[in-house]
Length: 443
Ligand code: FCB
Image (cartoon, rainbow, N blue to C red; front, side):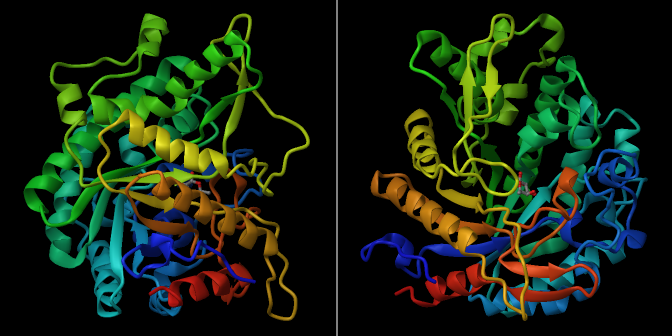
């Protein structure tokens, strides 16, 4: 089975960048060589992770990274998106852990030697636990710690990196971590989410200053995720509720960055739920960027609610992946066009897109036809957005390989490579072969 993009699609050209993505906590293991992070603590708390697992070994990438770079290279990708584990490279006193830093330097050197462009994400959720003990993202000081960490990383990596993203999905860190409490550090309460979000956005802005000063040649930006909300009915009430949900979950992160202000909804939030915004914060947050990374998986449906601002409805009878996310590729095109209309966007890279499928391996083969279908539809959705004028320059499949899927543990598989967690044997799935074929047939 193969992917099919229209004959004249710019996504069939070798100038369109393709890659695969991972994140430190989800694949590395090697836990004894770094400080604890909030996900270690969260995993150690009963009932937080679906299968009771943790990131101690994960895909053992810390020990198998050379083979994994071979694997990455075998797809013929242009780029590899990885993240840096902050508690691996910085000690509690704020100085560099040379051995931890060297792990990434060696990895980056190997990628470069193979002609693979490293897209480095500085924060993919593994906050050092000692910073959480001091308030984590509810403490403004953490944003400045992130700026210092960024400076250390950038200086150590020199010219080995192609692109830096400051944060991955600040929505997840802020909302899932400090409001819904289903991600680390598991704090619950509407009074916390937007405060954490503000400090994360500030951290992004402070890191952008460092990147632009010390790493002006790399592409510097951020990775945001969007789950576009669609109204359940055409009623004015449902549409208004959906507008608010979109402001609360999606534009809350993009508007400060591109327009230097929060969505209007901020005025409707009770004072105690609002962030404390200092003079100049919004200027720091809204600095120009070289690229925007967009992660897309699914959409959400909303209706009006008598007392809440909106209510999410899980609609029956629609096609979903095995993590329960609706398959609705049109939302991907709509989102890209919408963002392009709203903001003066820099070049866009799709930094994550993919599907969780309950794969089975039989005689060394994983025939993940549903994942192939998902990728095919979503690649075409990106192509449609490009035809409508959106400047999308690249696409990363999430993920290179099955890995630790946060609160779901190892139960959900997103890889284009199957991982047997008992033996750590990696097997390229049919989707991986289709991806490789697409990449090799570019002109
Ligand atoms: C995104 C995360 C990524 C992965 C995918 C499935 O929200 O950035 O780490 O877990 O979802």
